[in-house]
Length: 134
Image 1 (cartoon, rainbow, N blue to C red):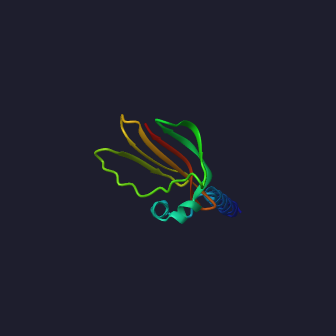
Image 2: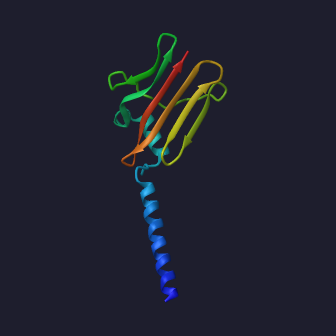
Image 3: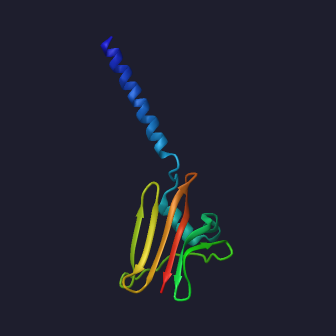
């Protein structure tokens, strides 16, 4: 009888663990970020589908100081692969299951570019952008 109760507890515990792990995966991207990102920067039609318009962010230039800017499909400029010379640019790309951020900047120059991606319905989307070039 004692073995039966222990067995039942192990089965019940395993079931709870399995359900909680499965629940934790809901909302995470089902696609590999690296593959998504490569296509995002090279396929304009794909990029337009994966930007969450209106896209919130910041646009800061010598002429524009908008800390609450929103891009629309009409104002969007296609992003392309970055040719980053490590002498001039630094990059900080961080990817988890629930968030990806790519920061590109030149220290002490006023150039800072940041993209934030989040998964929705198991696909990655650009959800926030900072474009600063002073």
